[in-house]
Image (cartoon, rainbow, N blue to C red; front, side, top):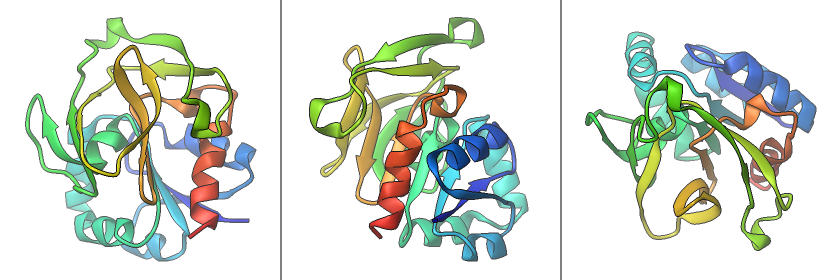
Length: 192
């Protein structure tokens, strides 16, 4: 059983822990660099990316998180997707820069513009034919670098992508009963 950490500084980390357990992982909350040493993969949850960055800086986690992501899988959702991208817009901010993406923060609108939609993943993705997706002040992926693979789109926008060992969702899969996306991440972890 893979041991997956959930970065538990801010955001919906508890919902991810529960989703990972439903998917078959041992899930633990990670708040320190030492906690990273004990896990096989990491989820960076949704929340508020600016606040997360401040807490990451306060806990001296920027370098340990970057080093972790250079050798082990990370699954970033919503704010986590923002933190994984190498370029962030609206406003510009620094990040872990682990995936060659340009992401625009809050691009679908304010909290009142949040929505639940049905996605139809790419046929070769290995995911179910339809997935419920919860978008809350979601970012939009504006540019993808070489090697970034789209697994699902909302309209014309890529909303679930992978790049090497990393998985990125601009929505909140942990807020649904379907653990298939978390299972896909666990498969990435167990494949090394």
